[in-house]
Length: 161
Length: 203
Image (cartoon, rainbow over the protein chains, first blue to last red):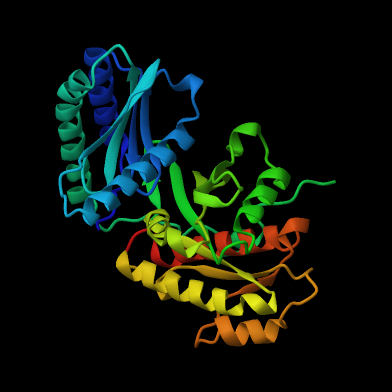
């Protein structure tokens, strides 16, 4: 299992264009790029109404659970997951080894049309992540000028009663 | 493994609370959610619990928490619990994916020692299935339920659960009273940040 690479401004700009174009073409409401450990990497669309951080985490874990089920039946091709609702539906689509695209769309749109537009978007996103991986496979943040004494202090405090 | 977003200057870190059934993992997150002091409402996310009808964790609990920037980076801690019941071991493996730090919540009561040991063994095995090694991951041991009448001495818990060359930091706690909860979280976050200082976020 590889590591999700470090993204820079150009990467995010690329993802932004691809995901916005996808939303325009598909008429979906929200597109989230989610790392499979549950991290929300990037979001586009009208996400004000929902807690996208939690949505991303729930989505990734649900997707991972389905992958686990796939292993149990020796199936290697559970690459997407679809849930139909009364007003909104969701589609989770594999992007690459480490990430997936979580889409929220109105139920009157078909999952087929979502897949039609999302598949090339996911491919483009995967290619960009591949570029980022090649660019900086081992590059971490340089924390060398961080004062270790700062780390010793408690980051989280209990509310005063 | 931690995620760095240079564009938004964010560092995202995953901490998993692991331990036997009813040891107090969910209580730890509930107390943190209820009592943590935050500069603004956006710093504290919702506590999401996927539980059974009898309030036992079915999949996981999730609580996102942000804190002061590290060298200009907003640091987002994603706190998870795993289900304690053995039948949900597959679920534990799913939640452990991409873990950066672990809090092992042990039940201090005498009659829970076997469960503590078995769960710790499962933790090591589950990490191996993910090609991870506990020795490489910051881990804190919390001896919870110290307020109960029939608890084992800390020395005995250390002997059973922390008998290794490099001992894990341990904390006594009574999570239901919010004692030892913040100390545990602050230690695991401090260990993670020190690891990042020493190694860089990614090797």
